[in-house]
Amino acid sequence: MTQSTIRLLLVDDQSLFREGLRTLLSVWPDLAVVGEASNGEEAIEQAQLLRPDVVLMDLRMPVLDGVAATQRIRQTVPTSQVIILTTFDDDEYVFEGLRAGAVGYLLKDVSSTKLVEAIRSAARGETFLQPSVAAKVVAEFTRLSQSAETRPQPLVEPLSNREMEILEILATGASNKEIAAQLFIAEGTVKNHVTNILGKLGVRDRTQAALKAKELGLI
Image 1 (cartoon, helix red, strand yellow):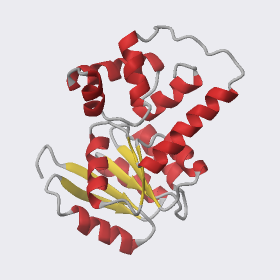
Image 2 (cartoon, rainbow, N blue to C red):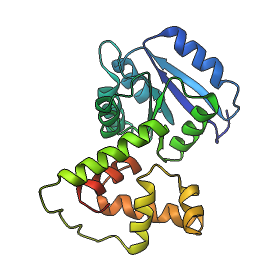
Image 3 (cartoon, helix red, strand yellow):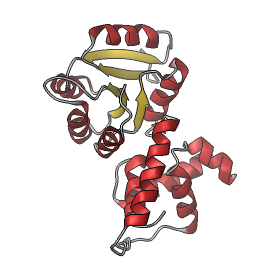
C-alpha cells in the first residue's frame, strides 16, 4: 500500500453487498478496503480504529443508522470523509445525510467508474453528488430562498467577489477542476479560495458551505 493509496471502510448490513463492493474496488490499484462494518456502531468503532480516508456508508442499518454514524465519525475522525451509498433518494434521507457531514451521496445503481470518481473526489475533500441528488439540493436551495422570512446575518469577514463566484458554482456540486475551467483560473487558486470560503462561513466542508450560504441568503 503506497502513500497515495485511498483507504476505504465499507459499511452496509448486507454482507453479500460488501463482498461484491470489495471485489469491485480491488480492480483499482489506488484503492484499498481496510475494513468493513455491518451497522452504525461498528462503523464508528472501525473508523476510530482504522482512520480510513473514505467511508462508504449505507443509511438503513440495525443498531445505529447511517446518518447518526456519519455525524459521529465526522466529529471524532474528521480526516475520514463519508460518502452515502444507498438505495434511497428521498429528500429526507438526502438532506439528513448531507447535514450529518457526508461529502457525497450516491445510489447503489451508480456505475463503478462514477463510484471511483466519487471516492477520489471525497479523498481530496471535494463534494460529489449524483445528478438526481444534486437536483434535489438545488431545489431545496430555491425553496429556502423563497421561504426565508428573516434577514441574513452578515459574515464577520465578507466574501470577495471572486469567492462569491466560486461559491455559486461550488453549490452546484462542481469540483475544483470544473470551477477552474469555468472561471479560467488555476485549480490551485480555486483550492485556496475554497479554503477561505469555508473559514469565513465557519463550516468544515463544501456541502455545508453551500447550505450555510443559502441560509444566509448569499446564493
